[in-house]
Image (cartoon, rainbow, N blue to C red; front, side, top):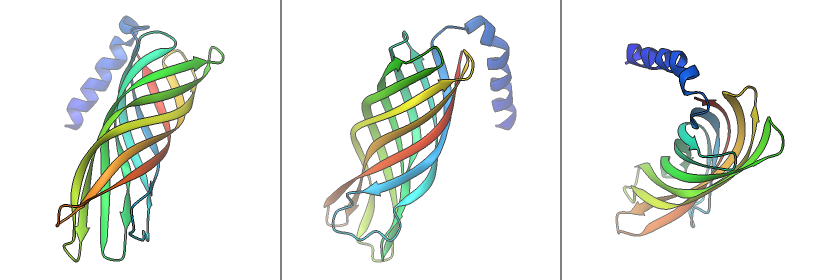
Length: 181
């Protein structure tokens, strides 16, 4: 696996001049997620460090699309703990303020999956597909490398063994690096 990843990264580095200005980009993010609107349960912990990866295509200076996988946080109550991840696809609107600095907004859909560990057996993991959106800023260090600071909101859920669903939201604040081909 490590050799395959190293070969892929080397291929990208060698091929970059040939694909310059193609519109394709990849990136990685690190951040913090905080759970909100978790129904009647009292959360004893509702934030966590998360990481993610993304791939996108910038059609022009104002519009693109992006697919992202990210953690959406961990949470605990008196009797259970849970962890969620999300995969989403969003349209990206970009407002360049200079050659190097821009604002962006995202709007799309994400599917999240929550895994639960419950001592009472009352709660189960669940999946939820919901709208996702976000805002951020990007500073381009060079034509190929950009640094992002952003906020994204994802919908998640848990179920009870009686079949009831509790929907909640995750707010993800992150810093990331983008590499354009």
